[in-house]
Length: 345
Image 1 (tube, helix red, strand yellow):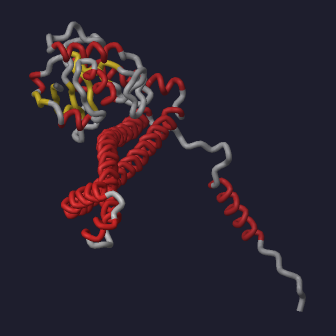
Image 2 (cartoon, helix red, strand yellow):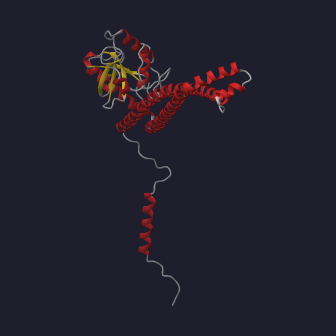
Image 3 (cartoon, helix red, strand yellow):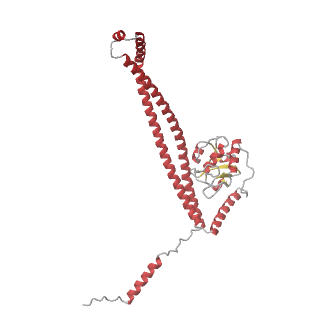
């Protein structure tokens, strides 16, 4: 029998060649690039990513406020522990003196000790001191036990607060990482656009803003003279106006970059009102007002979960720090989903 292999028929060779060509054609080359999404789709994705980033940033801000409150409690507990340790040290000194007096007068019958004493007057003085200590012995030991228990409780409370601080810090760090990742994804989407596509995206945003302004019967980007407000509200608004054009940065509260609640917090601080660095907490801790009651300086809260806040500037406008890649600016209230309004102080 011959060992030579039979050559495949010509049709088989052709079929194999066609299949190979199909596989090669299906494999993307090194120069292959995904098609750029439509402008409207890019904008939708970018807005969603930035919205999610701001949500977790505000959560991190809330945790930061918790950490500051915990830190204040820890410092107070540490001061309590220090005072308690000094109290215990003083008690131990008193008990040591008692023990020394007992040692000096103990071991012999009192009459015998008096007879053999070199100085009977000194001995009687020592006996008087020892008796005084003996009368306090029970109370001193009970107090020592009580103070030691109190010190242990204070140390345990401080350790519990420190544990809560570490948990809040870890959670805040994790949320900031999520915010940074979402912002990076949004930037990557924008970076894929050509200069012309970016121009068209900005134009689309401006057209939408123009429609909002037109629906309110005005075309000015900067609102005209605002309605009167309280003195503190006017002070807060004046501060916010001075920051127009400064960039948004996650977790920032000045002096030259801001996130939304950092701007409102610092604006109202100029008016003598202390607010937390969190849109939800600013809402929770301030007087609620209706939309029709808005005055300049009031805080306007946006989105159902209240993760964004701006300062009312009058005529249906707010000043706010929008998102990464943008600066502090005027925006119509209608440009974002309205959730509520409050008046700090």
